[in-house]
Image (cartoon, rainbow, N blue to C red; front, side, top):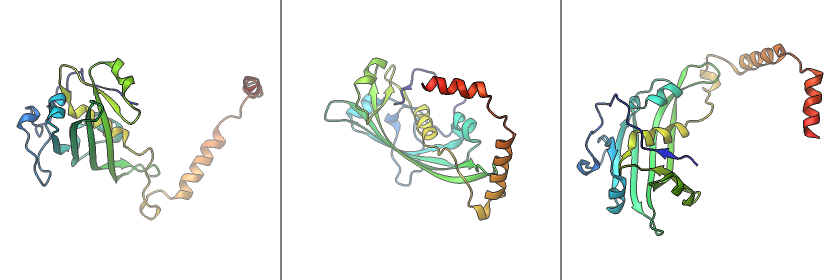
Length: 205
């Protein structure tokens, strides 16, 4: 269960496509052409059962670029703020985008569709996170403000697949080439010392 801390300051470089105001000035556009606000008051939005829906530019996610390389295009986002039957303030979220990720065989970028649905529980202190059910990811809210850019980037990174491959017919490296390379690497590894094997067996006894 990940704990998102929103107490840190947003990145110094703010993307020009983000609305710097709070969500009170936000109006939902039917074709998802509206940029999401950078920062919101989540408890107020939950009390009003508000929905935010719009776009976030992928090049605004600096950590995503470090993890998967430079990205272009937008991430489509929908966030429903609510109060559940137990009185918990929650955010039910959905995001969808197409990212360029490196193929494991040839290392060339390839388009990969990414979609994630998530349920977040708002807490005002770390200790309250343990009170949430396992279905909820805790989000720490400080000073009644929530940085949406940080939150969405975390969800997006968690949704990235571990490994992706081109179709073999369209890949610069064939499966046979990849297998032979792995075999060469394996054969080049030194054999385990008998003492290491014995130490491992003793550890199991």
